[in-house]
Image 1 (tube, rainbow, N blue to C red):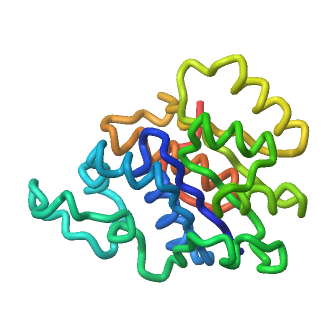
Image 2 (image 1 turned 120 degrees about the horizontal axis):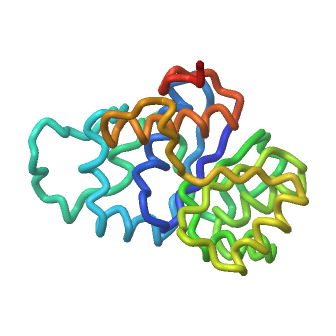
Length: 206
């Protein structure tokens, strides 16, 4: 399966990095689209500090302090086999490129509003518009709390068009004992939404 992972500037951009790497590890073709806001959030949150227990193919996280952290880029934490696209003429901008699904994780309120309005002023938004027009799977993971009435309206409108919403929420039936456990649940549920088998968390069982 060919899947697009859009990473917007919402908090917790490291979750987008994680899901992209997990999708690739499951044997699927992955394209990552990283917004300018995501790059800012990546550095302001020092996202690499939350990635020590996940699939990080290139970055060296052995030391507690990473040298030259101001120069770190998201690309260093994405597998080199992931196709990173950014220009409006890249493949993800066209339905003929054959991408079958897209997940925007995390999704900012700004990105959500623009998707709902059909605005396509960057590649991430254009790719989402392509998913809608081609009636392919689009999953949005809004990272906001509480949701504003406008965001709820946008989600309702997009839901009526077949968009699936999967906010990064944890559940305690998986018995998380650490932040990494809680995040594994979120990533696992996103993979479930994409119909990708995984064992990242304990399934519900009485």
